[in-house]
Length: 365
View: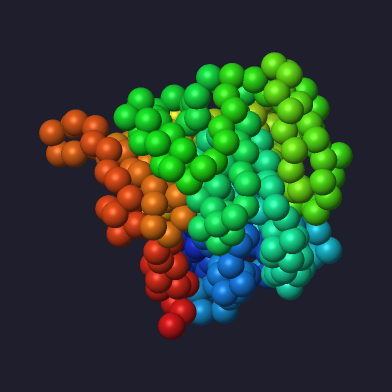
């Protein structure tokens, strides 16, 4: 029976592993001891109940295969090297190692218990704070603002964005920016655009301690704690110094063919945040790419050509601003872009944050 090693147990990785489990000997290698539902991490940053909800065990995911907790040191050919363990030989490898991002959007610790302890300390710090600074006015900064404003209505919140507007990256319409700006103003959030900070605060992210900083335009900002809401990076360090290093872009993403095989290879795929597919990095995109890989490896196992290709779909932007506010940018059947308001956004994502969908995928009650 063919062996398939999946590197990374995020949204794309668990989809591939589960989909190929009936067909092959599947080994999922994941650094963390539990699945982390990052789409709900910002709510966990302010809510004691969600602090536990975002962590889910891998124990029910695979019926035939197995999950190995460990950190991949390098991949040579189709041999996956894991720190402190024997190398794992495979017939096919799927790279699904995702990306890193500053706390609290993502957690660096491999142990859920350590991440929960840091969240508990953050909750205490937020309860004692009177003001918060968020550096970055993209989707993470805005979504975190909504969670903070909902959980701590008296908290003074300032967003500093170096671009001339919030949601400055390509793909967002003026209509979405205007609607989000209106809601932020309604919440009493101070938004400073067009100038970055002259220097970062003297404390660690999420650490309680009053400070004053300035933008390069000379605008002073006082706060009791701060968050860095920028800085995503593809997790592909284990490819440095290997035969795959030549396929890496400066931002850490890796070059893939339309069928999601690495360029010039027939036995190693990549999906999710680490690919150079030109689209925003989203959980639903990672899952769609995973289905392409499932189809292609299934074809190869039957001696056929891996000819299923991935086509980026029309992107939906679902941006909650806490449980009850937010806006969405959708493309309808006629190809027209539509902006939905708070009520529809809450229905799509704001209340449940897709937890039930993820638990079902992990075969959890």
